[in-house]
Length: 385
Image (tube, rainbow, N blue to C red):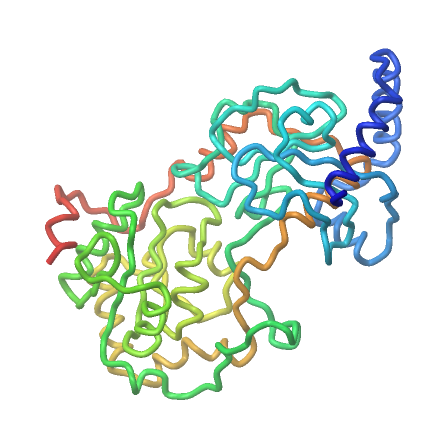
């Protein structure tokens, strides 16, 4: 019998002991009373830190059941290994929803299940609101979130910069680099790899305007220039000085692999658009990127890129961070955080989102570039040339 079958069998026996609805009600009242006595933490991150430091203890004898609706993207039907707590089973068996401690929602399909008072619902997504897989009708049913945003219950960034002495020796440090004249061997200026040809952000228009003043080589689905994933990175590392890390929308904290992997890990200076300057500064070392909002127009940005192209010393200043920092992609293990959260709910203050739709969309509303230019233009005018 597999680990999952053993866990499921044990949970069925346990549920059979409390089938009486009246008794279930009293168990929930008792749980609420315990929660009121223990709910001393406002944030999961604070609680997680104290748990790892041994400041609080959690009873992990009972198996916690977590049902996922949508694409799991985490290990399911197997024992968790290497997590702070591992007494959870994550699966996608919908009929077990009534017995689960946590429901995780990852897609647009609204779960056809009853909302149980003795469980919590968590929204899990890496996409920004314009492309989110989450159902906009979730309303006030969500207790917790797991997204790229810093204000999520569980913060799941696309990447992270870690000081060298903190990097685990098991990680691949092939990208480590002693400061040298990186500019000397690169002969091309700006590259852009893009697959979404009709984004909600003004990146197409900005790139088009930028291309009037400096050469922008476009690769990917929106251009006849093609390159495979690994070959693209090799090409950037060898030939290009700048990379357009332009996100497909302007939203709070939305900083993806376009910044961490395509640019920082391939020795090109990222020219960024998406989150605000301050939000990039919160995740990146000083002088490691160029934000479009630092310039009044694409023309002014192009002038600065031309300056860096001709000035090796100034160009190489953008890589000094590599002496102290390394990039780690997708540094978190969501399944570990899900399990810990399922175990420490009584320690957290009551949490719910009064309007999930607003929480999602408000992070993008009102955001616009410093440069404003009204032009009637089709991206096809220049992408395919």
